Length: 350
Image 1 (cartoon, rainbow, N blue to C red):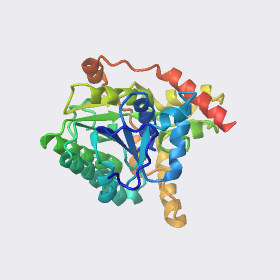
Image 2 (cartoon, one colour):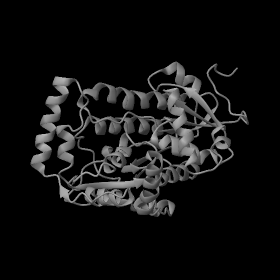
Image 3 (cartoon, rainbow, N blue to C red):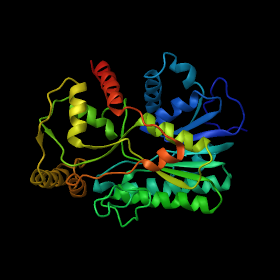
Image 4 (spheres, one colour):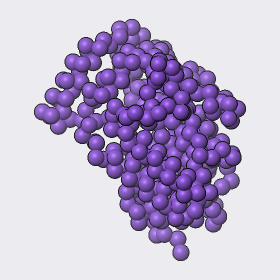
């Protein structure tokens, strides 16, 4: 008998299904669109029903008939920390894309980050083992990788020596849970995307870059990091899940850009003046202190912690050659993708 809170698609077939956790998230929504183009049965977890409408909007960016694809999804209300709801989600599942996560750099979210990202992943892993799923893919982050050694690009082999943020620590220990699954006989893959550039999530996660750039700021951040388009992330994880590669991790970084380069690309596509002034280190030090005071006096969420301010002072480079070699993977033209996403933003914002 099916769990009571399944929302069955119109053409649902009772076969081994694909499960996407975090289906209403940035990666989850775009992943669902690609999966729905295939023939397999799909279900996805959500926490807030009102966010499901955003997934349908994401579908409309890529097709004139979003409803037809959207109806293929069986939606299940589930929290990664709520085992009974997860048990229902794992009914008849053969493959799992674990994309549900909490992304926060506010020190106040320390316990919540560790619970959601570490214990939540442990719950997913335990259910994968219990249900003997065919394969598990975990969407991690470059934050979970070790630091650069002798200024060389970071690779999948870098040794973890500790994270500067709780988010990084939570992703690292979440990966340890996934590796535990591999030791218990579950084939796994882990991907470590850079900053994911994607449309639709304009005021959260990396989507906030679009929202801020549209205001025409005069300053850009110093340093830089790895950037990747959401379609590259989706393409890579689907290829990894459908292929024969198991028990490997892959960095997903299209471009090692400075924040200045990224800010200029956004400004041009959004028809805003270029932010030619660089935020200086002393400005970062001043702002994170002011932000700390503001948070403690007014109870506001942190916008810049001391740890994140430190990260903005150093350019970091990532080596993306492993996935290119192993899968013959080709990254999309990220500049053209940014232009396309900015066009969507302008259309939606009027």
